[in-house]
Amino acid sequence: MAEPIKTDVLIIGAGPIGLFAVFELGLLDMKAHVVDILDKVGGQCAELYPEKPIYDIPALPVVTGQGLVDALMAQIKPFGAVFHLGEMVETIERIGDPLFRAVTDRGKVFEAKVVVIAAGGGSFQPKRPPIPGIEAYEGRSVFYAVRRMEDFRGQRLLIVGGGDSALDWTLNLQPIAASLTLVHRRDEFRAAPDSVNKMRKLVAEGRMRLVTGQVTGFAGEEGRVRTAQVKRNDGTVEEIACDAVLPFFGLTMKLGPVANWGFKLHDGELIPVDTAAFETSIPGIFAIGDINWYPGKLKLILSGFHEAALMAQKAYHYVYPDKRLVFQYTTSSTSLQKKLGVA
Image (cartoon, rainbow, N blue to C red; front, top):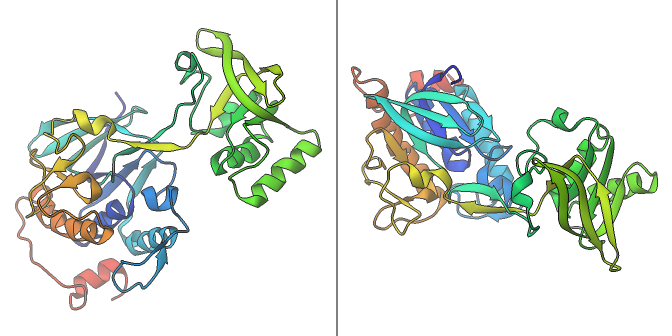
């Protein structure tokens, strides 16, 4: 087991609610590490609607999803939260009172006095393409995310998809790949026009291939792809030699490992909490934002911000059991203003 990373609070989810939790905890001198399955902060706001306008954030008549995330990141900068992106917390166990051990799918281990689940609707999971037998290759030569570009250096790559992720990774990986083929079911793309133009330029220069069609199967052994069968739009079938396949068919929301952490779920997908501190049935584990449930719950970012503030008040007593918590306002407290760097 890896050497544990010790922190006051482990936050699962780097969406707007998880980010604001960093702020509320930081005001009370609690340090946080944040884990998210996505490769960037912002949750749904950044991944699904970065340019979509949001109209119900207090004092902001309109802000984009990405604009809100950027503002939250600026707000929490004084508190030095550490982010662990592109990984998912798989297990949580109590090892003390209070103390939890959490382990991610990449083998990273955290020890925290408090755990805050701010995972929105759950974890983003890649959509598996309908290719027979693909399961046998997953994790060895078929990958749904790029965690280290160097892992693909010198390989013959096959990228499948027509959205931003497919085009972005085509452009990023082409310079280090031995060869690269992009397969999409049609010659139109859902990606940024600039990315599409750059890809077409590489094709015109003979530095990569574009094939319109669909992958229908793989050949290989022991989880290693040797060739992919592609049925082209003209009805012909082509065998494309490759060492790794990267399908980008979008993301779907699933509750994921949270369902196995011992909570009695509401409607099978939401974590019941109290309304005093949004604590779960497991003392020391809180759930805030869209992933929780209580009577009258509204799935609004505004509601999640409120929940984060009350959560931090209760979390303080787990992190500092011998200290008295004095409630202060940022407008009048010089100690809070010093923490924020504005005094």
